[in-house]
Amino acid sequence: MTSQPPPYHYALIARALTLIDEAGPGLSLEGLADRMAMSPSHFQRVFSQWVGVSPKRYQQYLTLDHARRLLADRFTVLDTALSTGLSGGGRLHDLFLTWEAMSPGDYAKGGAGLTIFWGWFDSPFGPALVMGTTKGICGIGFAAETGEDATMDDLASRWPRATLVHDPLLLQEWAMSAFGMSADGRDTPIYLIGAPFQIKVWEALLRIPTGHVTTYGEIAGSIGHPAAVRAVGTAVGRNPISFVIPCHRALRKSGGLGGYHWGLPVKRAMLAWEAARSET
Image (cartoon, rainbow, N blue to C red; front, top):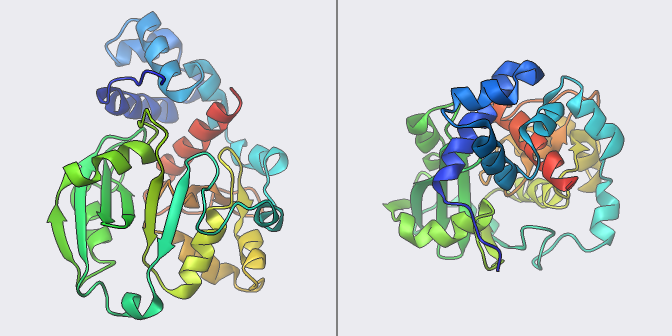
């Protein structure tokens, strides 16, 4: 069993990622450590432990052409991913996900009769709101750009007739697993609550390996609707389980980042964080 860093380091690293994103590659290790009120050696050690690479190496992934380089070097053809078994209800790539989808009939009820538990947790990308049923995580939202009240209102509005219960202890182990804090490699169960077309798009997103990207057009083709790129983009944006269902890995064909429901700085940080870790 590998030792895990203290949970409070997630909030510290979230601040560091924001500073690096705002300042760009010109910010030195000493300058960054000073802003974090830490010694350069201590900061580098903590940062490298969480992100997997040094702050300098991470900064290289935040250049303006990062998305284009990802498309050139780490593009995933989803039909190939499907043929290798990275889909369905079994275990999925590096997060060891298991998933189950709500039936269309139950989804149409707007969450009536469903109890959804919720709690706030630290993540590498700022405060994260995690929601889940007894079957698994059904929602993750990030508040760094939108604020906690707006994030709560946003996710709660997805299932207007559900009963919401504040119970972070019930969700803690799943949240720790989702954000890489679990020391025992346990599964992260997720529960997809959406319309049938949306669930097809989210299943396609689950086939994109960590550190890789695909395009909205590729997703549309992989689900049998090659002309529905705009509808796919809408479904990607409505993904309720951000980061775990990796909507941040969907880019425009041109190499543009496209939109991101929780703010483009969060999307850029996620892509850079994953790309840096995948090269170690």
